[in-house]
Amino acid sequence: MNPVVERIETALKSAESSLTSAESAAQVEEVRISMLGRKGLFATLTKDMGSATPEERREIGRAFNEGKQRLQDLLAQAEERIKGSGSGEKALDVTLPGRCGAMGHRHPITQMIEDCVAIFRRMGFIVADGPEIETVRHNFDALNAAADHPSREMTDTFYFADGRLLRSQTSTVQIRTMDAVKPPIRIVAPGRCFRRDTPDATHSMNFHQIEGLYVDKNVSMADLKSVLQIFAWELFGKDVRIRLRPHFFPFTEPSVEYDFSCVVCGGKGCNVCKHSGWLEIAGAGMVNPNVFRNVGIDPEEWSGYAFGMGIERLTMLRHRISDIRNLYENDVRFLSQFN
Image 1 (spheres, helix red, strand yellow):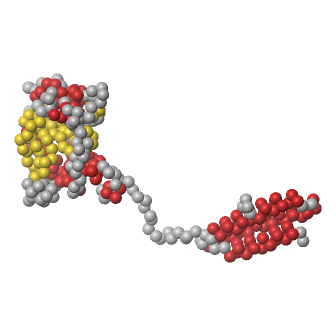
Image 2 (cartoon, helix red, strand yellow):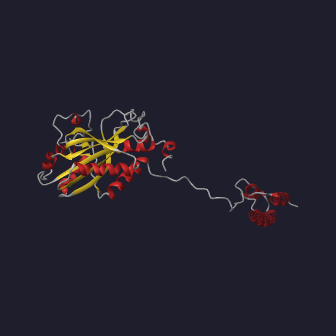
């Protein structure tokens, strides 16, 4: 027998034995590669046929083709056997519970914005929006900020070379709305704001506010207080009390600070409320007549109130977060707690 033909027969017997005892698809694949791969037996024999005589090539070619076909049949049989027995891959137990992939969810700040908006919508407010890059008029002038007010300084506000700025408050949306819409007006405006604050546990250069504005005839402080009380109850429960403390803001007159009874200790006093029993939440007040005049609204005919509160502040209170920076570090271990 021709040595090459004998070599093919020997290799086929060895392959048949290996395939018969194979218990996995990986073992079948090893045999296929050793015989049919680029460096396998049949590839090597193809190169060796060049030195054979014409008669030898005919004999080798016939053995080559028959052997290759036989090997293909053996491989197919082995694959079918393993597939049928389920031993090629780990068998699937259909009675086991499914494996759920990790699900994404909204950021806690986004959740708080949506919750606040939903509360105010139930009270008849609509959502308004405005650009984050603003003019000095919308951010300061129309809001009755004095020309020498410290918030106008470059140490407090981010300015562009052309004189525009990154808004430092969502009150800009109030001005844009009153410029474009005639009273009555009832809006809330959530959005990002920017200030040159030094980042620490309670301050960030980038933060979120939600602004409220109501303009109509005969609006009073009683209307403002009732809306703020309902908001507190809806967000933190019926046990929360509010108080309004006199304050000063250039765009409201009279102006107040809006406080919640501490949602951590129930008003008894703790480290969060600095043992006062109260938490500062927002600034509010009746819209200053000068602001109305700046947007072409007659303050003798119309009155209104405005308020603004920090979304991060509310989020930190809801989830007992002690450092605002945790909300912006994108640590999945931290954020995954807020589903």
